[in-house]
Length: 376
Ligand SMILES: Cc1cc2nc3c(=O)[nH]c(=O)nc-3n(C[C@H](O)[C@H](O)[C@H](O)COP(=O)(O)OP(=O)(O)OC[C@H]3O[C@@H](n4cnc5c(N)ncnc54)[C@H](O)[C@@H]3O)c2cc1C
Image (cartoon, rainbow, N blue to C red):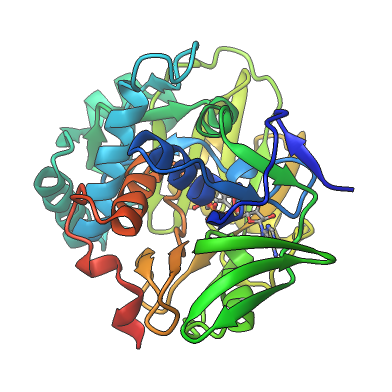
């Protein structure tokens, strides 16, 4: 059963076809339209957008990252979330709560320093704060082993469903439409095949998340060997006395993070088992991993209850960097993939970069570090 999501009429004309209605595909579609391209067609295999990583992530806008290219896109993306264009969304997209990154092992101070410098270079606000001040901001920190934390005051918590819906609001999205093949003429794709249906394409955007690598092979594109990894989230259910505007807390080692959510804590053990593309099941072992990591990094939350848990896939390239740009082998195929653990925060900048490369307009950042050709 094929149907247009949000009820826009469909036509069979030659156009840009985007595969995947997660943040990668949705933001690229929005930017293509904003930059004046003819409305693209978004094909989504599920009945609704956001069934996978884009609808199941932790909703944390974190700008301070290890590497500059990622941090730059996250910083631009977060700026968009704080100040979206007029009419983009009726409700606020982000609650600016700030975030605190720290090292609970006592061994990773150099990494924290590197992240601090990178964030400043990327244009994000970030400053080291002493233990006492950090605990004042986030009482859950009490008992955690750290002297200093990196405070990013403009980070926050995002309404991910409002964001995804706003990107897609006036786009043509065909849900329940699984792309199964491609038609080629020379080094170009001419048609995208979904079962018995065929869509003419002047360009194709590979934004299929965990499925991108496998699907690209069907198009004769470069084999970028992207790797999906499963990650779990746990919710405690409502807990007394929790400040819903408290900053998120992120320990780098052992890696674990928590953020306020619906009157309780949303908690992540930062697991990363390699997994085939799918809707992954919850593994009971992840709850143990969470408890062990919290015991070291955030003892005050170590025995929190778990009311609900879920898992989804984050997808990585071989060097962990994003893959945005033209395929080395297929002239009119563009990748917007391998967004790892930052695809929501950076989405507005990722879509802008992708759309500018497709249309040949000025990109918002240097596209070189994201180019698929770096793996060729
Ligand atoms: C547990 C977890 C927590 C996270 N927390 C954060 C966070 O706090 N902050 C942050 O910035 N990021 C976070 N992320 C990362 C972020 O969610 C991802 O980077 C982002 O959602 C990736 O978007 P995407 O569009 O590339 O992939 P997806 O959301 O997976 O979308 C790809 C879409 O393509 C569709 N598709 C695949 N194959 C086909 C086909 N053959 N035909 C048609 N459609 C197809 C899929 O159905 C899917 O809807 C988290 C991720 C996880 C899993």
